[in-house]
Image 1 (cartoon, one colour):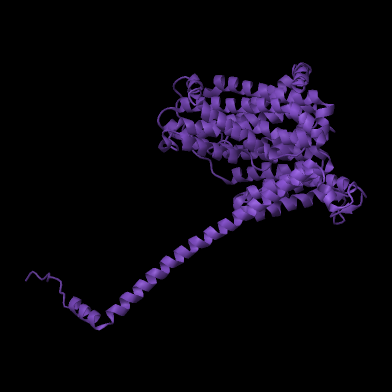
Image 2 (spheres, rainbow, N blue to C red):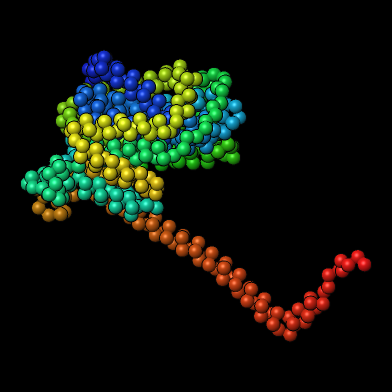
Length: 546
């Protein structure tokens, strides 16, 4: 109880931070900007955050992170608009929204679907932040127990979870993560300051900048895709009815909403899992427990609630491993981590001990952002729907220009622009081949953490077993072994199932060939010859009219 009392005394001090004019402006820009970005198909929060990262380096940490958090969370609200109105998700995580949102639009219930999506997203976002606030005092006590060994194992677990999350592309994801780890080693050795993998190029001595890689892989690659694509003709449906209809409807499905929000929080806390797993788990649960499961995919309100609640519960939960351990769970939180480092703020155990006001201010900012987004959507949706009609090529040129301006502003280096363009082409190829991009960024971020923490840990241990002689280290090591064992088991089961399908297909072909052979052999017997002779005596009726 004392923990929570101490935490809530911090709220008053943190509220003073949020009352500053620059933080208020950041809240408005993040909430409104995120909705606009999410409502434009083909852009997404990753592109926007990548472009804005260089600009946030000159801001106060709380201001820069508030803008990025606003875009991260509110883009999912905006992404539901094109998903419901034109069957095209504004962001990747809104893909499941199209299953039941667009069928509602075809029935003339577009406003009902939008209001239901807004209310579900709001509930998921608030639920996630409240869980974050309730866990904060516990994290403040547990986080100091994480030393260099524990953080190394947690980072290693994050890499493994990211790789195994790409179920059918695990080997490719592992290769991409390894490539990212290798990129993090380019430059000067952290202990001896000797050059590594610089290939006698002076510009590589300072290493490969994470922001250059992020802008190339996410922003420039998406700009290339938009420029090479064709503009689609969009026909918008007129919105009729009240936006408060969906809010009332959400109250009729409290079980689906609360369970979906719970899935979002749990999946958000696990690195490498994120919105997609939370959404599909929530959607499956809602369908199995529904009284009318046949309506799912045809405009079921429960399906829309499950999808939108789950994906908006993830952002707040994803901040837990980032703030408590300094370990990002996905590309967006990895980008935010760079803002911490630029301002010499180290997320992890020390952050909760030395700068609790900053942590609580971030929590409150997330809470306020959700309120601002819903208020903005209720007022501006009728005008906001027109954003989906912006031509793709215009967006591509805008993203391309802003990306190169952002890259050049980092170090005023033309070499960085060339490097970003190279990663842009690489990212474009990966996206066209449907190969994972995120493991590269996480490999770069976590690789650097792992190297530093492993070096510090090995200086304190005498034998390999000493590495896991503390309870949390032993638990993390056991979890790593369990995750690997489960993944290997799943791979073996998939291989067995694939072989069974191949055998059944080949067996069917063999059976057909055997039947054909038996038929041919029968026709060559004496009885078969008589049957053929009898058939050959059949004569078609004459068509001669004479």
